Image 1 (cartoon, one colour):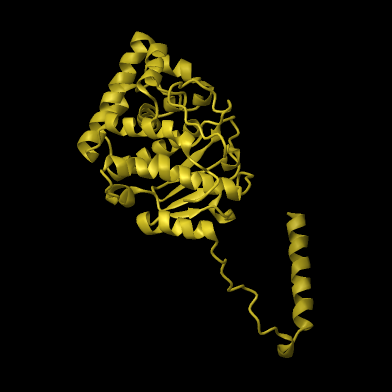
Image 2: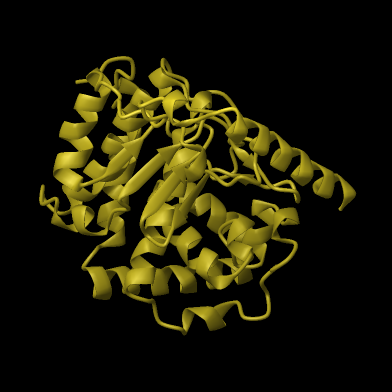
Amino acid sequence: MNKLKYLGMGLLLMAATTFTGCNEDDLNPNSIFSEETTEKNEFDLWLLENYVKPYNISFQYRYFDKETDQNYNVIPADFEKSKAIAKLVQFLWLDVYNDLMDGDKTFIRTYTPRVIQLIGSYQYNSQGSIVMGTAEQGMKVMLYGINDIDLDVPYANVDDPYRSQFEKPFDLNANYFHTMHHEFCHVLTQTKDYPKDFQTISAGAYHSTDWVNVTDKQAAKEGFVSGYASGEYNEDFAETFSTYVTLSPAGWQKIIDQAGEEGAAIINQKLDAVREYFSSTWNIDLDELRSIIIRRSTEVENLDLRTLN
């Protein structure tokens, strides 16, 4: 309290001295607020044609501190890797839904978040978890850890749900696109809610406070596709969706095998509920969506992430 008091007095004294030393003749007629706008570079023009015009998405790769959580220390995204993730989001997310809708951009343009903000580093929570992506009320998606992308070895794992996300080569699905589909699921369920019956499947089994200590393999035996899914039912629903559509049949089977008979029965019951919701509410066939994602995930290794085209 004393420090604040003395600081306030000092500022008042400094302000008084400043004002008594100035008069109207000393005022600078130029505004202290710059009216200059950043000149658009090649990447900005590419984003205009590939994000703004077709989807009304603001793809923000420059660092804006007001767009970040001030409780975390994060760094800006690298320019070249920002270009790479822009191409990857287009190829592994936007175009996935365009393929699903036979080239009609209406669905993804209607429901896609309006802002994608890139952050170079991850957010690390106090309990040890890592934040790789967030979605705010369906309007903005934050993608973290952009500076870890390998520009020369694009790789999207679809066959091993228990592969470490830190293993090389860098896994685009584990680090970004599983998260993108997860967050997009939240956007859709916030727009049109799923049946409440889903909440009863694992009622009483959620790890609301200690899910971070539940490994993915342990979670499977309890009827969850991942440790994160065991936190609460909304995350469980989105995780079931995003895990299923980003894994090949062989990859999904590894979870079912790990779960055992009891855990597998619970997971399959949840998958049936998710499948029914997407079919009846959005006219989306989960298996068709998955086949497109798997195909594009295997094709990603052929992308040139160093040039815009």
